[in-house]
Image (cartoon, rainbow, N blue to C red):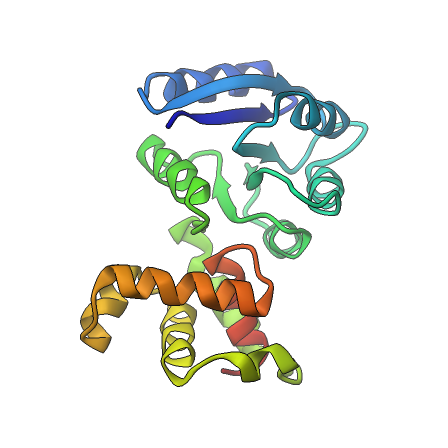
Length: 212
């Protein structure tokens, strides 16, 4: 299955560079481009991409507003936030708005491709340069009360959620819990469904917010 991509960035040269990397892959196709947030929202509704790569800083409507608009519309593409600036307000704002991933523009092209494929599978990916700071930030916040939905999780699902909060992959969780990797994937999907979360990144954030 081809992964359909929308690139939203106000700099044409950045869009061209991203398109060059993405279109070179046999399983990825760039179907549309946008130069600002409002264009990105319209293009997303028109072309129905699987993944949107959204620059944070754009004129007229910025990336954060565009992410909020798209995620508030119900069924939406998975969104990867992209920025030149390694600032906490962009990172936390993008994830809280509903982005599944966060990358810096100077990231390795291989990580970009990994992020696109992970996002398409519902996993999400945060640039390793900011992951540790993200976890530390949520770990130091005052804990929120556990939602009633958490009580629906089985003991095993709670164990998997704990490992998600540590940033572990399905393979690592499988080795830790002595279960099949496919079983871990099933548990992750059930956790997301029960907690009404979009990706495993949001599951990790949930765990840290509630001190789980």
